[in-house]
Length: 241
Ligand code: F6R
Image (cartoon, rainbow, N blue to C red):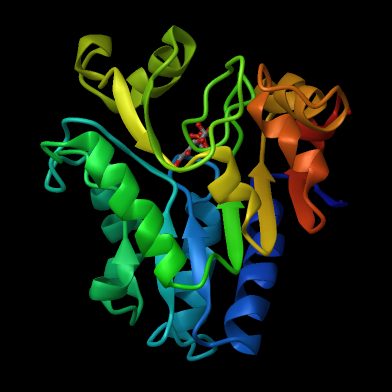
């Protein structure tokens, strides 16, 4: 595993953008695994800026997102599809038909999970997977558990995750209690993994994931077993590692 330590969030976003931009330059038809949340917003802004300068072309890129809330329509401003449109897809020349987010409104969530795994398989797998880290060490919405889940599945969100995400909703009650998320195996099959983490409030999660035992009670700890992980984190997030 490689660690790139940066001064702050902006520098983290810049370094992460260098890595994703290299991937897109070297393989213009890459499959990008994408995350939502605060951590990658700066990275997406940098990618948009490089596209606007004419340095990046997304026309052959495909993308697959980690997760989606159950019960939020794509038009809901807190759905992860909406987030991706708003923070990246609407601003670059990606073909929206080549972008995939689990359908949180699916009548049959199990069938939707199977369909999503098939989508990833049919794309030939993920070239580079962007990840943030939850305070409890979650990756995607793989919450602390007794087991590592394999493919995409329906997950009940932990109280702490609902608390953390309440900041984006009018009230805590509005935060969905369930999500569809890629499983640990789906994430681990990515050829490269790029973890972006910023802030002192994530220092314990970084320590637990990268400086402790590999255990499903800290889902991100499994990344220690992946052969090609790059952790780009600011000093505050690395302060306990
Ligand atoms: C988002 C996701 C989550 C977040 C994590 C960190 O698609 O899957 O695992 O990456 O909750 O969230 P932020 O970046 O908002 O601190």
